[in-house]
Every structure is written in C-alpha cells, then in structure tokens.
Length: 541
Picture 1 (cartoon, rainbow, N blue to C red):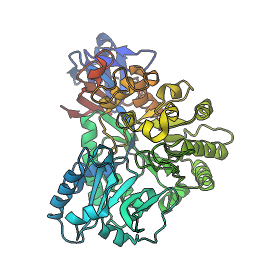
Picture 2 (cartoon, rainbow, N blue to C red; picture 1 turned 90 degrees about the vertical axis):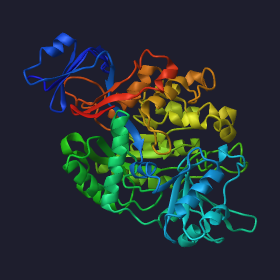
Picture 3 (cartoon, one colour; picture 1 turned 45 degrees about the vertical axis):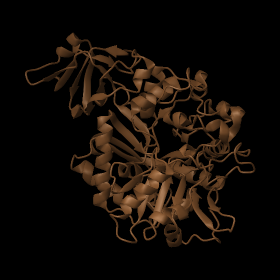
Picture 4 (cartoon, rainbow, N blue to C red; picture 1 turned 90 degrees about the horizontal axis):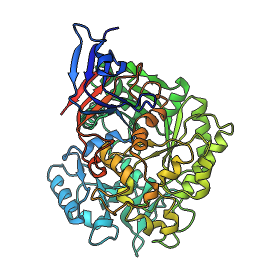
C-alpha cells in the first residue's frame, strides 16, 4: 500500500519500546503505515503522496488528557458567560461581578470560577454580603479553584431555599455565622444544590462549548481526552446528559469534532438507561466512546471537604466525611461492571482513598481487570500504597495539582501525612500505571507545563530548588508515557492510541523543542507546532 502522507526528517519519540526513536512515518487514511528511517518511509511514496518535511522537529504521540470537564471549562474562554476569578484578589472579583451585572437583566444568574482565598490579604472565607453589595438583584454563584467550594450571594441562597435551618448533605458544609445565618460559603452537594437552580444549556450552546474546547486542545497537541462528568454544565447539579450526547452525535456526524472523546456519566436516570443498552464504543471512526461511570467519595483539600481519618492540622476537630455511603458505592460499581462499563471515583483524602479501595475489593472480589480508576489519589497512607500492588487500579492524576497545593498541603495534613501526598514515584513502584490529566478548568490544560511539574516537582517559578519531595519525581519518559500509552490503556485503547506504531491511529503532535533533551525548565515552554489526528493535520501554529 502506498502512503497518503509521509512525514520525514523528524526527531520522533514513538513510545514503542521496540523502536523508541525514528526519523519518519507514513500514513494512509487514519492509520500509521510504518515508522522508521527516511529511506524506509520514502519507499512507500507514490505520485500522489503528500510529503511533509519536519526539518528536524520533535514528534511525540498525541497527548491524551484523562480528566477534563468540557462544559465548565468552555465558559472560561467567554468573558460574558463566566467571571474569571483565577489569580484575582477579592476586590478584583467583586469588580468583575459588578461589570457583568451591567450586562444582565435583574434575576439573571452570574457564575464564576477560580477564586482562592489563600492568596488574598484577608484569607477568611468570603461572605454573601460582599457579593450583595455589587449584585443585589442577580443571583451569584462562584466556584472555588478546587471545584468543591462555593461563594453565593443572598439571592442565590434564597432561590435554592438555603436558610439558617438548612442542614448540609453528607460530606458537605453550609458555613454559618455567629447568629446562625448562612455566610454564603458552601461545599460539595450543598453548593451544587444552588447550582441546580441555574438554567440549563440547550443543545446549540452545548455544541458550541465542545467546539471551543476542541480548538484549545488542538492548539496544545491534545488529540484525545476523557470527560469526567458528561454534561455537567457550569456548576449546576443536574447535568443535561441526553442533550449533550445528542449534541455530540451531531458534531461527530457532521465531522466538526476531530478529537477522540471518552465519556463518563454520573449515576442517575440516564445512566440507568445506558446500562440497559450497554456502552457505545468507537463511534464515528473511533472518535467517540460512552463507557464510563463517575462517582465521588469526597471533596478537596482546599475547601477542607476532602475526607481525612484524622482532623485537619489547620482546623482542629474537622475531618469532613464521605459524599456517599460505601454500600451505595459498592452497588454502583457492581451494576456498572455487570453492564460493561468502567468506573472512576474521585478520592482525595486518605479516608476517601481507603473507602474507594475497600469498595473496589468488595465489588470485584475476583480482581478482574475492569481498569478501575481512582481520580486524584492525592493523599494516601502506606497501607494503601501496598494495596495497589496487583490491584489493577489506575490512579488518574494531575501533576499540576502539586504546583498549586505544595504551599498548602502541610498546613492541611501536617508534615507526616504529607509524605503520602502526590507520591508519584511510590505509586509507579507498586507496578500500576498513572493516567495523566489536568482536571481542566480547575487547572491548566497545557500538557507540557504539566509534564514539567511531573519531572521537576517545582512551581511554575521553579521553586523550591530541587523540587518538593524530589524523591517522588518521575523521569521524562515516565511522564510522557502517563500522558500517552498509559492514558490510552486507561480507556481500553492501547491497541489504537498512545504510541506511534504501524496499525495504530496516526495521532501525533510536532513540538518546538526536544522534550527528552532540553533543560527541565524548558519543558513548560514547549509549544505545539502541528497536531495530527487520524492522519489529518487539524492544527498548525
């Protein structure tokens, strides 16, 4: 067979251990025909073959992001839709809310994402009264940077029916002042109860958001990703899952969506219907799969809603708690497995990690390889690392979280417990794989910045010198593997994605410097020059 395209004179890292480095590759249709030397590849050229000279540039397999929230993330690129609170002072956030109030009719919702009181002059939690001063006639709900705490004004609380008599759901909190009135700070399901009052998106708006995120991904060399809560929009609780699936069918059917999407749906009526029909795998030439189930054990350390077995070091007496019972979790895992679905459960605190591992063992006593995912696996005790060995569990982790949390982690859990936090080396040493991702929009999508964190264990400003707990750092190869071949494995697609080999999809990215040999600090500055999905050049810088 002759090649449709050949890419020559490249510095290609294939992630295929049998042939890790190559000069060129050839494609036909969506697939790779061969990878090898310039001469080997050029032998497949015909009169109609397109030849692309890479001019010595580095090529790596397409990045696979294992954790993204599409509809929430898309809002961050539209200033009229969402207040961007990232890296903003409280005063700047209030000014931004006041500006968007001018563009809205009274009663219309205002939402935002990314506030973090840890960087404010006054680090106490914000209040509804502060928002009331700039938005008395519009309900406001702002999501904290971690995605697990909320700042609401009085009108939003009133619409949701949250009063001094309200009791927070399990694992959640409604903070109240000295007089017993809600302050406007809520965590977990208490906050999503407010979000559930936000008007839902229609199919056209959903489609627009997927295309917005796709553009951002292609620009960064992300060729595949997993949506870890399909249809979750903004910060609402009830996801329009049916509308989202219908929008995706239209987008892929019309050829507008190129990126390979693997979805996870939260328990509810739509998921029960999906169990009856079974998973949908490899639709639209391998670009869309509905196969995952997403659940939560706890919240986040930043919101102090992560579940710890012992009290928070900076909040005596407080441990938070589980968002769901172990019995419910075990039953849902069994149902999912019986229906042919994969399960992914969010667990950040060490009590949550233990709950999820216990539930996995109880639901799967034969330890079948269902490729069970634990999202974040952020803080764990020594015994849980031991339990990973031979478990088949895949920690789905975000290297960027260390960069934003390293100045907080010891305050929250103390020095001793922090030794089990972001312990990437310890995890790989158990023999399991890590699936890498970003949790966009809670953290940045840029995969190269995330690779830098995985290798350096430093902040974006290259601090601390030598890295935080440097013995947990990974090699460049290990980090890239977690973002390619191991992320493909985590979605049952290692036979088609994750490495550049004959017979696999021609998904790859051309980058502007040599990832394997540039200075560590340069990794974070890598830019994608060209993104290819299924042999089609879908982005050029």
